[in-house]
Length: 109
View 1 (cartoon, one colour):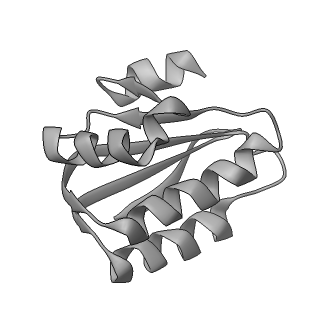
View 2: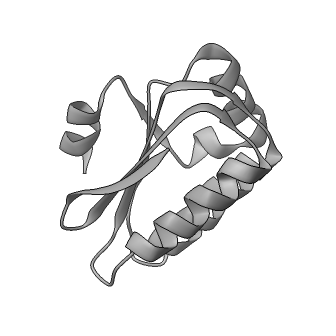
């Protein structure tokens, strides 16, 4: 799990393995610490994520609310089928775009 600034106004949040209560809390804390006044967009790299529960969905929605106020975008990179299904069932896919890799996600910003 990691949170980095890819560009001056975009956070890239990489999650691998499982996104559950413990890891969601860690990512939430790191993302909020990295979130600055000029942050408008968030990219979630889920290419190595194998499991996500409701804590992960809550973490995504909380970060989305922050960027929504600034007119920003939310992009999810390469979710595995089981993760994509959870995102679709939760409605997150209606607010997020899917891209195959970080490079394409950054172009969308």
